[in-house]
Image (cartoon, rainbow, N blue to C red; front, side, top):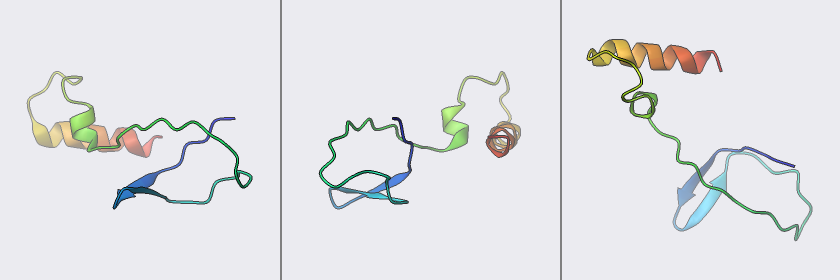
Length: 65
């Protein structure tokens, strides 16, 4: 089973945005992927130097997800 859930790192602990459908004491493996600014994530993918246009394209792409 694979689950994706957002979390915030606070004081050495990951705080999940929602509860997980897991049993108590169930062992899992965790992989961390940073979420970031959509403009930074798409840097170099769009052959354009206009930051306003690039941000608009990146944010529009997020709405389609």
